[in-house]
Image 1 (spheres, rainbow, N blue to C red):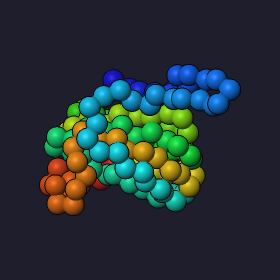
Image 2: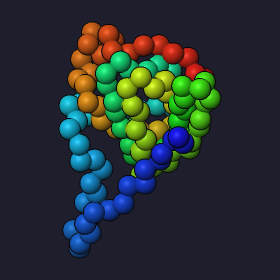
Image 3: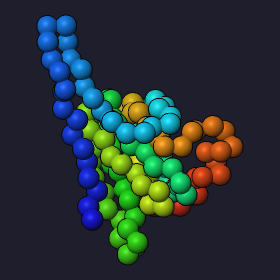
Length: 123
């Protein structure tokens, strides 16, 4: 199963501007993360948490490791997002200085987040 990059489209446009629905799902936490060009994030998997990463500005390479051991890669640009399922090792390498939203099903509180996150180096 290939990585699915989701292109987000405007939901409503009028003379005042645009409304874009990014996600309609039970999300517990939304965090905004900045990353410098060349930075690597994640290189882990989660026991329970799943999350969507929506790129506001910039571009990244997103990696997932399949149960077969095969590593898949996709380019994710501003206006697109990817989903990281529980138990799936994933990593991100930023091709430009970037800003993204991480929308999670588990709270990202210090201590709780750390217990759910298992280091797993992909890149």
